[in-house]
Image (cartoon, rainbow, N blue to C red; front, side, top):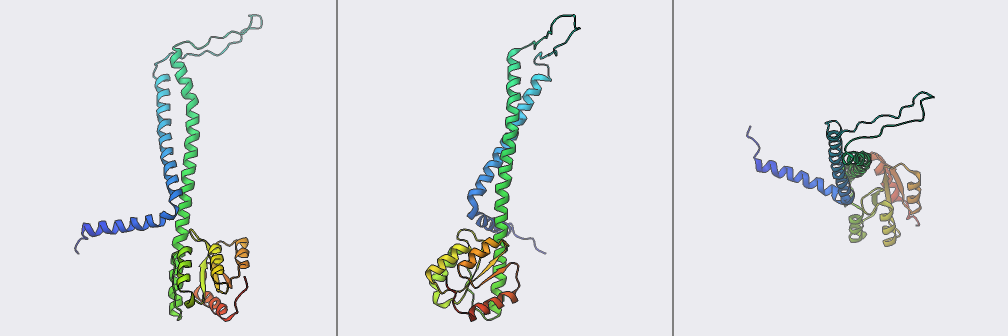
Length: 250
């Protein structure tokens, strides 16, 4: 078996990264913010290491005489309290004191940056996962509808869907849209379609499961709301019912 040429392998890797960046692009603001906070978390970790190393060098390596004696209480008849205070290099003592105050601040900043980085990057990951699931669902649904004799005009998001409907309005009998989409989401797309054509027939799919979102879409005048995941039989039945009914009033 012949080995794969390096040029072909490099091209495949570049294509994979190009697709990944294509999915990240709609959420680039949060992604960049997550990367920046991750870098700040790493920098604060380095600063914490330097601060602790400096304190260790000053205290444990004998570079300063920081001997401290605790106040001693003598016998009741021995007189008042007395104390022997810090004796040694006061400049070094001040440096240690300042570093001991800085270390907790660095720890707090590191925790904050780490939390923000994880939160932002996890949010982007969840949105990309939802986008990929929606794309797979759309492709499977489109193939199922085409096998059943319907002509499908697919769109990647709400903006492209609205643009395609504006171009092919006379040829479109029904619009199927998802609730959660990057940019123009389902409710915004429905409102725009209703403004362009009040008699448009619309079916929504939703994986959120929130009643408030479903009620708000129902008030816009859609024919059906399907909870994902749903099989082709349910989708085909909803399409037949929507095409057989009269136009809903907005």
